[in-house]
Image 1 (spheres, helix red, strand yellow):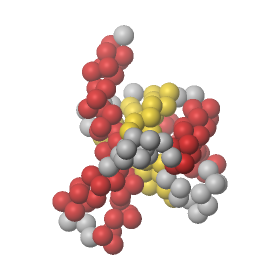
Image 2 (cartoon, helix red, strand yellow; image 1 turned 180 degrees about the vertical axis):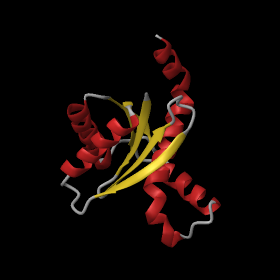
Image 3 (cartoon, helix red, strand yellow; image 1 turned 90 degrees about the vertical axis):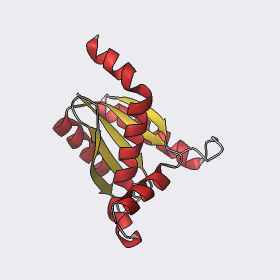
Length: 148
C-alpha cells in the first residue's frame, strides 16, 4: 500500500506517491482547475489515483505561516482535507509545508529548469518534498503499522 502526497492550492493540486515499500516518493501530476471553488473534478481525479496506486492514506501539506501560525490558507486546506476524508474514507495526515516551495524551486534549478518552466512542475515537486518530509519523520512508525 502506498501513501499519496498532496500540495493543495487555490488552482492546482500537486500529486506525489510513494513506491510500494515507502522508500521513495515520485511526482505524479498536477491537477489544475479553472475555478478555485469548483473541486468535484479534483476529488474525482484524486479518487482515480488512489485506486490506480493502491493508496491507503494521504499526506496533505499544511501551509502554515513562517512563524507557525495558521492563516486563511490553513483553514481552506483543512476543509479540503475533511472533504477528502469524507469522499475517500482514507486517513488524512497534515504535514507542515513551510518552505517546501522554496525547496522545490531549488530542485528545479538543480535540474536545469528555467523559471518559465516552473509552473509545469513546481506543485508536483512540492508534493514530493512534502511526502519525503513525512516519510523522513514518520517512516519507522509506518513500517511498524505495516508489520502489525
